[in-house]
Length: 286
Image 1 (spheres, helix red, strand yellow):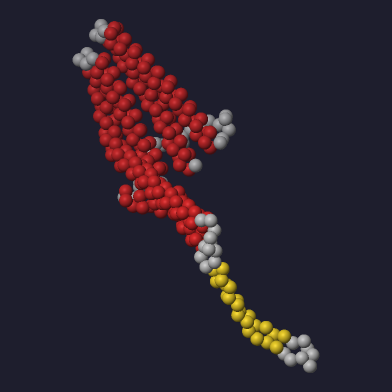
Image 2 (cartoon, rainbow, N blue to C red; image 1 turned 90 degrees about the horizontal axis):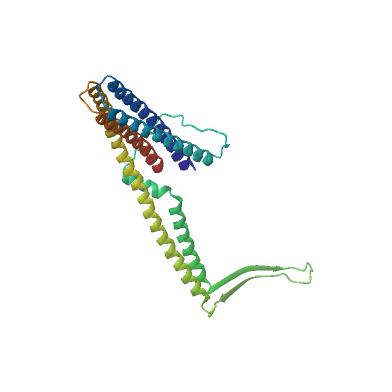
């Protein structure tokens, strides 16, 4: 439940930020459209540039509409998970940033998972139970020896009677020579159950290792991508600024501006995705 709640919250953060990115893209597209219209009015631009800007603005508006729909769906999924009222409007209150650091190496993480995952412990317990069941089944056809010892004291409280006392010992041997093969059948079934438990333990252990490795590798990759994508946002922002200045000066094209706008939107989205994937991977490891 904790994992699902945290994962849904990070998804809501991502959707909230996508709405903000889409809104910023509309602002950029609107600015480009205004520039194209002013240049056309001044006789320095073309109608084609204006049409290009209008198409790009329309696309940005469509992206915002879809981002808002995805945001609402993410809110609803989190509300359903938390079992809050249908009229409750959930929003992500925290800034999107790295949720923390993972202090263990890959091998240390795998060992911790082996120690803490309940499904592995369950298979070990089942293996031990099957071993005990085998011993119990075979004990039914083995000799059983009962030994009893005691002390007797008799006195009728009659002066003419003598007091009698003494020790007694008794040994009894029971041995079932034939039971129709039931004991061996039960022992054989216990052996099979033990083999099944060991096989299931190995399968679950491989699954656990794969899950830890996937989360760890995603964490490392996302950490690297955060740094790379942050630089990409800076570069794309500067590229858009220069493309817009060139276009306003009449030495650049509207296509350059639109491409730069799309590059900036993509860089922002990749930066956001890297942080969210990092936090999700950290949540999975935890």
